[in-house]
Image 1 (spheres, rainbow, N blue to C red):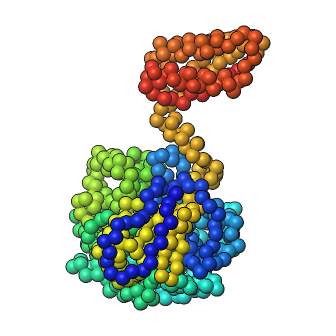
Image 2 (image 1 turned 135 degrees about the vertical axis):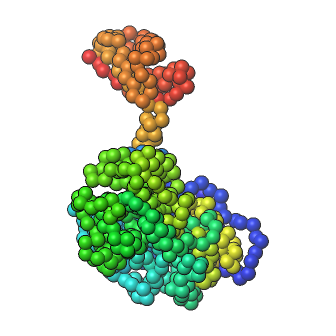
Image 3 (image 1 turned 180 degrees about the horizontal axis):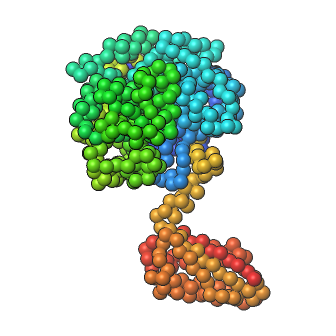
Length: 594
């Protein structure tokens, strides 16, 4: 449990030793105490995004008024096999869903909108959702994939709008730069002060390194609102320097287009619509036709075209089924799957499984995306397969063909220097990323004792002149989406899946005479992912002998409970197999009484 921590606003720097609570992550926290609204305090409760990259969801509460920001999903991890998505835990909100006054969605990436179809019905389909035009359309299109999901009440906002959310909460919206158009920051005006919530962002620069004046003016304007606390993203905090210029990226992609003699294939995220717009412009310059591969990419490009964010001449973007009609030097394929996802378009192309695209010598492939941590190995395999087929592959390691949407250190320091908040709470990232953001804040003039590192599920009380990290927690453990099931896959199921993946399983089938308790037939052994039975006959026979020994020790006339017998077999055979192999397969005893 965390220690209670209070810090008052102090101007100037301090060499005070950090008093941040030393604690294990709250990922599996069940909730330690009842929610007890504190009179006069603004409560901040992160339900996701503060111990991972993704699953972003924050809750602000003043008296009986609740405001939610973002409702995102997280993609599965190595220790969640078979899971489709991971979403925030809203257990703590359900008893108070009548108090939810609104939901703000900052932009259209899935780590900020992806959980809406799974959670909105639980919280209330009539809750107003405030977001921009493009994000609204992406949310609506995704909602169409869930026929039973309620119709959403979406209110469109734009730069400069001020919306009264409830009696004590107003929100002002500001355009910010990200890799998708229509991203916004929010200044939440409350009785304790103005809170700036600045999620995924970057500062754009020209090729000479001069920052975009629009970005600078935006954060100056936010700073003019006298910000009490800045909630600032941390994903790029450990990366030194500033964002790669989008103009430079466009120039480099242009040079690769000019050199390419054969087909061009660009792999990117389906939601990287700012980059898609630039590539469309370059394709028209080089007289290439664009073919989209990937359902989500087609959907997002269509939405962006309808709203005017992507401007393509008639006949520039064509169905991929028509690609065979054009010469190689007239073809540009935009494809999803640059992260090596097994079922994505680019991986299917690399494996020769795509219906319309097969890699051949002379193809130029550009990975216009960053490598998400954990995806290094799949991307290496993808790149290797593409190269073996004769393609030339370009990544950011060779030439700047991508600029991350998450600002690195200098971008974040610039934002903090312009906003000049009294307090800082880093959001969106692992603990080490958020800790790096605290160090950046000190360099930007925010004393370390005015910065707070909070974990998912912790409850923070904010007052006009201080912030209190309380001992109260709410449930913040993973809620997993597996097929049609939401939240029905518990930790024990994950442990079983991991055990099966790592050690395999052994099924022991024992058939006994119901009257005598003696064997009717020799025990059957089935192995999956553990050993090959026909090559380990000695071990299999030893296991059978051990089973016969277990049953033989039971008094002939004594009735034995089936569950107790299975438990004995599981424990003793598990120990025996480990001593023989130093491996721990899952032992599944089956007792049949005839």
